[in-house]
Image 1 (cartoon, rainbow, N blue to C red):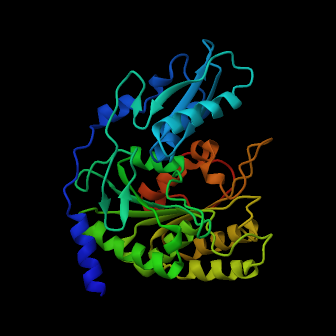
Image 2: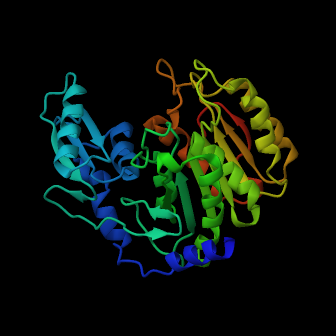
Image 3: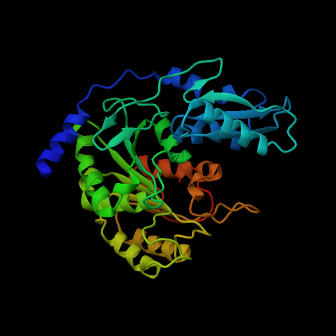
Length: 364
C-alpha cells in the first residue's frame, strides 16, 4: 500500500506545470508603487505586498487613500465568487475608513490590478499539496526550495481550506522559495489520516526536484509540521510553527492539562542535528495552556541542540500587543519578525537566530 501511495504521489508530481509569470511581471502587480504616492504606511504596504498574497481565490483588495497618504484598506480571500469578494472587501474597507476622506475602491482582483497588469493564478497539485495561487512559482530548478504551509483545524464542520497563509510566507517567497499548501478536508483531518499524507508527500516534493523543504503551519498545522519533521528529518530543513496546538480550547472540556507535557515530548522527537525550528507563541491564546512555559521549553531545547531553535513570544508593541491564537496573521508580526524567520531558514548555523526573542528581530 505504501508503494502504491508513493507511486501516485510521484506521478502527480510529474504533471507538466503551466507557464508562470516572470519575476518582473509578478512584481509589476504586487508592488508598493501600485499603492500610489506618497509612500504608503508599513501596515498598508505589508497588507498588499505580503499578506494579501497569502489569500485564496476569489480574492479582492479594497483601498481608500487621501492625497496626503492617509489610508484605509481591507482584503478578502476564499469568497464563493469574484463579485462576493469585491463586495466583502469594499464593505470591510468602509467599516474601517474612520476619518479618511476618500472612497473605497477595488485595487486588485486575485493576482491583477484593476485597469493594470495581471498574472495568472498558480494552479495544480504536487502530491497531496496544491500550489499557493497568488504566490510566485519558479520551479524546482530555479527555486531555493519549497515552503509547505498547513492551516489549522476548526472541527469537522469548519472548512479552513481557504484560510490565508501569514505574511512571512510571502517574505520567504520573495527570497526564492516556492509555496505549496497542505489543505485538508475537515471531515478527513484526523491526525492519524492527515499526518501520514503529509509525511508521504515529502517524498513527492523531493522527487519533483526540490532541494530544500520548509514545513510551516498554524495551530494543528504547526503541531503536525513538527511531527512530520520528526518522522522524516532527513527530508525537512526547517519548521515554522505558529501557535501550535492539538488539545482544544482552555474554556472547554478537553485534555489541555496535558498540553505542556505533550509539547515537551513533541520537541524531544526532533533529532539534535536538525531540522531547524521556529515556534511563535502568543499571550491570550485560548489553545495554549501557558505561553511562558512553552517559551521556556523552547529556550531550554535551544541550548541542547546543535541546530537553531527559535522561540518568538511577542510582548508588544503597546498599547495594542500582538496576541491571540491568530497572532501570526497580524501584519505587525510580519514586519517585526518576518526577517528573523527568513534568517532562521537561510543563514548558516552560526548566524541563524536561536533562543527566546520577545522584542522585534530584524535579520536575526
